[in-house]
Length: 132
Image (spheres, rainbow, N blue to C red):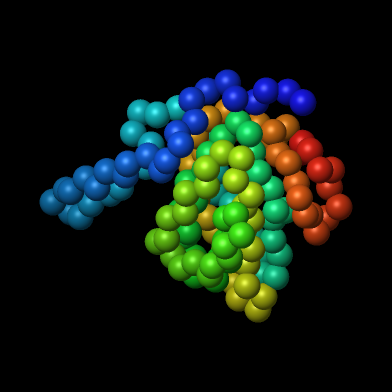
């Protein structure tokens, strides 16, 4: 197996800065840090594979109600605005409640984002246990 750890991976959720402005505020999740940002959309009743990554940790920011998030053995329904930290090598999964609208999650990945570092433990689409 290849070593996918080529960039620093934080062991804990990086600090989030709240910046106040006269018009309101904004949060900075990865201020001048090396990261990859993805917007995931999961259709009603669908779910990602139960997976882990050796080369990255992820911060998920839930944008819509109806997300079901598993980290380790804990499964929780999440609401818009919730933040979920997923350490490197931790099993995790994102799903959308059946009958609801699609859910979106903004993923901020710290480390080396590569599809090849995925290990799948369960997959509804019968994809390979490793890689894309």
